[in-house]
Length: 106
Image (cartoon, rainbow, N blue to C red; front, side, top):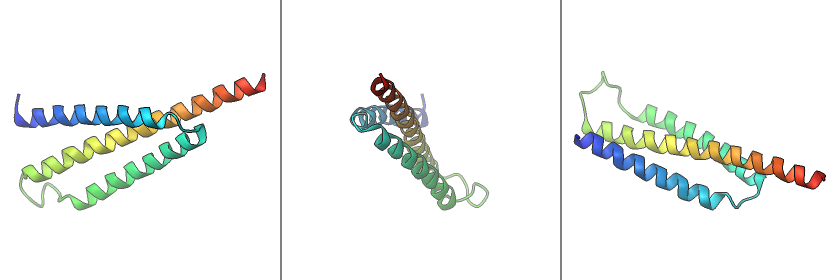
């Protein structure tokens, strides 16, 4: 296993732990709040992605840089974790709202 693979493993574990901890804390909110947080998270993830793509140098502009590779790797994991957490929150909030509506209709 190379150093790059080890860093990928650490980033994967860190993102999974952060997503699970954040999901555990956010699941206690009202359904509307969960959907709003999820929607805001998707927009934030897209903005971070566009910002990272604008700030990083193009591969043809500069040679291989370990710093650029590391920043790209960490940003990719952060964006991915944020998008997954946002989708989980939107789906959870929607399901919670549907269940509450069914319960109150009885």
